[in-house]
Image (cartoon, rainbow over all chains, first blue to last red; front, side, top):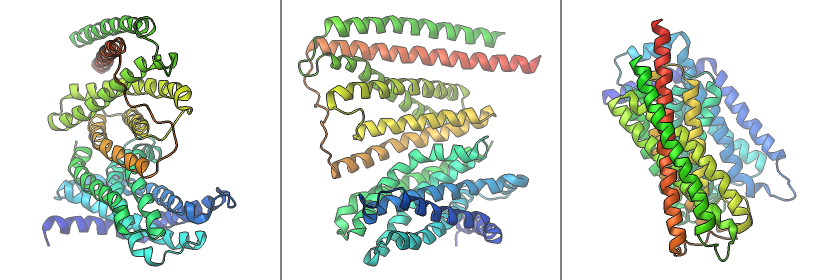
Length: 226
Length: 232
């Protein structure tokens, strides 16, 4: 295994281990996602709009809000006791630190999404059926891109006075393309449309991932190095 | 005191350029109302075109320059680039506010609606939000070097976000056509209208240059004053 990959995995493992010991952030994010789903159910007029028509939007707005909450955690834990300085002093390339942080965030957001999806099926009575592998793939494709941008922004946001507010203000415009693409692909998957109808959206999501993961990895040293 | 004097001279230059541009703006009003003919279908409502389009042009110019200059900053680390990017973003937000207010005022009588999720409208709205976020981030950071690095990263990521937002809202709209009165495709403008538009675009570009120079000089003056305060 290349050295950089090993180091990135070590950084990710450190984050995941720390999170599994307390589980506070993970549990709050999951409960938050469940609450958003419940609130959504009452925020629609059931006689005017069926649950299935609204389902893709509900799912993705819930994912986006829960991810935002989860991403705030990534660097707030590093702020305490100068943990980030320690990490930066270690002989690890910045790109590997970023990749590790990104992987840990993906594990975190992915777990929240994995718990939210069954709840969504339960509350909104959606029949996933054959669409499940497709939905998992689209979710992964959309999540990677905005979590990469969210990771670098959360490293910046913790340095500001209103970190919890700064992250959504910066990140939401960047969530627009993946969110639109994911909602469009999800609604086609749920209504059993052929793959060719969503190929354009999948390409957009993949391109977004490639561009922003690369760019954020390269730009990370400008954020942490004085 | 040399730093403060340099700042003052830049502020003066900016004020002069802005004053010239504002006089030019008065000329644009005259041209638009007296010289350019009244549009046959839209009537007087079309006059807003001479403010809306040039302010959109200036806003896009401002935001593109923020993105490019941010990239250069990460490479060269020249504080002048950061000052320019900050000034340009502020002026760009002002111009897009003009664009986003004149747009609906024009759209209401012509399209019959204040707002529509057309690709171009959505794109400019998100650009506006992006740069409001950029300025909010700058305001929330204390250390100048850190502020410069962070905002340069946001600036360059923002520049790359533009094609993605454009593509996604474009795909979104074309796949879900809505029965709205579409913007009439640019008819071949009568020469009087075209000339008025070009003059207006020139005036707005000058206004952009003037305001950015002014803002740049003010930032310099602030820095000079802080340094004087530290020395004392």
